[in-house]
Length: 611
Image (cartoon, rainbow, N blue to C red; front, side, top):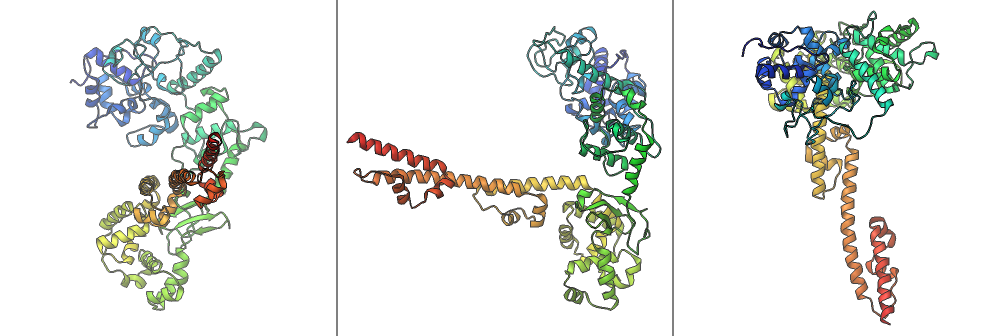
């Protein structure tokens, strides 16, 4: 294949990149697959990723090669994808940061099935980019519903197929430009609302103007969020920032956007859907968002919010950042707990700090400073053995060894703790080992300790010396997505185990699940499987009740046959023969009580007829 195409079709306004590539393939008699693979560094591209080329081509193709093949500028190629829209939020997108931004539009865009207007295709055989946006449901020219299926056979149209080059269905080879008339006429209000949405998306995709002026001290995306927050505020409240539920955004959504402006760990920022929703509900245009002039009062109130939630200083006396917050790394509170605000990791001394919500004090959360300064260090200076420290202070051996392992990381403590390290450590190699062990152990410290002792024959002090290395602590607390995935995997294992126990009619308790899975009870409590256990117990109970009901019905029939024909039968006689109280049966098997009443009635009727 040559380095450039012989025939290069003209780009139609609003056309998607994949549509243009299909037309180029048809004109040059080449396969779409071959064209994409020749421009990609990825060995194998799957069919389900073809639609993503219209969102962010950076991830799947080499843009320089593709521009060379098509004879297009990088700017023209971006206008056929969602890249132009995303760069308004995030600045220039490269192969390095593409992963972070793809989720901003992934749910907004239909990448599975091709959507089209048969009337437009007849005039201009191109597929528009805006047709794939899920919010857009009509063609703005013909006021008809967009289709995603073949008119002839009803099969869904794949996003990319061989027949699509010739505007045909891949299933029946029927033409997509067949005249189609909808049964239900579209409402005029619905059409107007759709056209407003189309106007917003068209300007987001193709307008060159920024969405908001950049404010001092804020990024482009944060500036857009500030304008959005200002638009949604109640103008009667003197323009101050508020966190209350509004007509457009909920309080939770407002807090998330506010946290993003503060620079908290809210990685996704603002989505395209939010911007469109606000503009649509306020009946504003994209240009109106840029024209918004945020009042000084509003900006100052937002800045005061930021200032009032500043991260506190490092409190450990041996840290080089003692008394300042220069080395602090803000963490997601979910990894520590909900009792602290602004949870942060000091990147020098590896300790976790946070603002205690109850006492409103900035404290070291794990209590390591208190343990070392008030117990372990004074006792070691007095040459008290570890065994005596444990015995005299009612503290676990693990805690003492952990404190000594932590102390070994800092030169200030070396004279005291040098004798406790059994091995000479090569940190460059062993840090990689400890990262792997921590990851394999689902970021559980106790599991990692057990594995390292078994695998490398380290002592507890040696393990804690490596574990408290600043690089390891940063890895642990910044790997929240990985930890979350591990948690989901563990949860699926636990649920499978519960299902197995349920099938075997075993008693289902935390202890039983712990024995079957190998997870400790503390880990099971963290996974919050209480509802799963209750559901499983109720199902077992229900199954047992069904069996009891079946057995009781058989006993009732036997009981009725044994009673003399001369006697008049009552329900109480049946319950007496069953040796069961009516309430006991009703609680477990209410249908059995109805069965007894019915059978007694039928038996007595039979006797009356016989007489």
